[in-house]
Length: 511
Ligand code: NAD
View 1 (tube, rainbow, N blue to C red):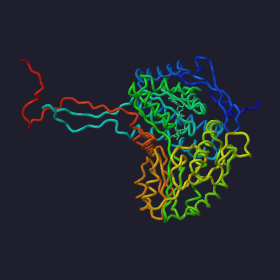
View 2 (view 1 turned 30 degrees about the vertical axis):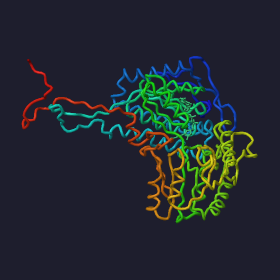
View 3 (view 1 turned 135 degrees about the horizontal axis):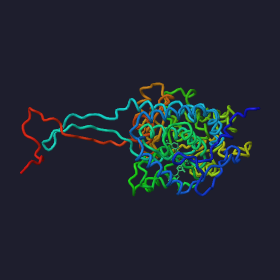
View 4 (view 1 turned 30 degrees about the horizontal axis):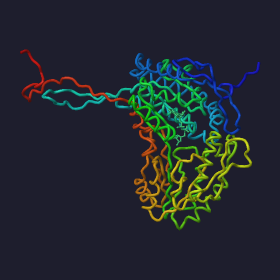
């Protein structure tokens, strides 16, 4: 008898996880999961409507209110450990699946797309279960003449709606799941319609290989974004943890207002790399072509390069060479660093943005169109633009494509001004021969993360998020962990202090 080796294709999960069961949509409908590199349908997945979302929210609410999940730390730790082992058991299946549904280059699945988050996305919050200070005592206090002991207690916030984008879907999902579960919440994971299978796979593993009680984790897939909006409208949901575009973030705020939702919004970016005049240009500038990796579909990518005015010409020459050498195409080819955009719509959007930048005065140096040699798949050529004024559309708005905009600056103050002159504030980089000087400039950048001389901040222990229109709240780190918690202050009568006379002026005694 020949043994069939499981492949990601045969193990892809079309069903959702609701209340501990793997289910089809109430309507019985499914939608297509399409490979952006081939434009071919990979398969289908359940197409939820509001009924399914309501059932998932109800299950999460019940699991929070009626089980010991929120208070049983040992159970949470065991559940997360089992999930870690289960995911590691399917790591290679996940790899193939992510390359197919996200169009991500295979090369970056060995880093941020899969292996890096699998290393610490669950483990770090799991370790925090033992290390975190869940309760702390304040000194005995006296108010209204009464002495009281006082204790600050951290508790799970409740039901979390975790809304996931398509660009780094597994990474973002795992980081939200890890932190929300470690802190004792229950959740509904809502993946983007473009990348549903890595989430349904996680749902199946939760159901089949862990002791996580039914309803604690739910996974709802839908082709309709407004099914995700049910999470923001429903009073049974306490928190929305959202990663996605700034436009959707605004809408979530608006829709969440009537039920006073707690919101964590990780939104778009337009981050700048400042190369100061003492930096080694040849060692620094060509690396800016990194913006093409994963077709530029990363929120924290360094999409603007700011160089000293008298080094602009030289920098553009170096970049032209680096962009021309960018290996791109079939994401299953381990040598390629750039794959397709996620959808035809997204490709058109990127091309329109480039066009608009050029209309407003940016100069197109390289690329800017669809590659003739890749007729199938939603590819955009590696694109290099120079915007001398740093003021056109492409210098201000997130493009989410393989596009770099180079602009000149006059001095350090001018560089900081240009870097901060966007609505966003997600990330940045400063390069200089002097770390001290780079650090001084980095401190002036209004963004949630900044690298110095190539420094990389990523990790489950490092808070990640934005200033300004890049959102608020933090994914990861202790700051992220605490976002999933409520704070309760409890007090009771303390023994009388023999050295102080009198009792409470509020105490009511017999008349
Ligand atoms: P998107 O905002 O279109 O969608 C993100 C998710 O929100 C999807 O799951 C979508 O179905 C859901 N959604 C859409 N409308 C909704 C609504 N009204 N209510 C509730 N949910 C809704 O973003 P996208 O195109 O999937 O992702 C790309 C964007 O995400 C980029 O702007 C990128 O910068 C940003 N991003 C930010 C970070 C970060 O941490 N700051 C990380 C990754 C991506």
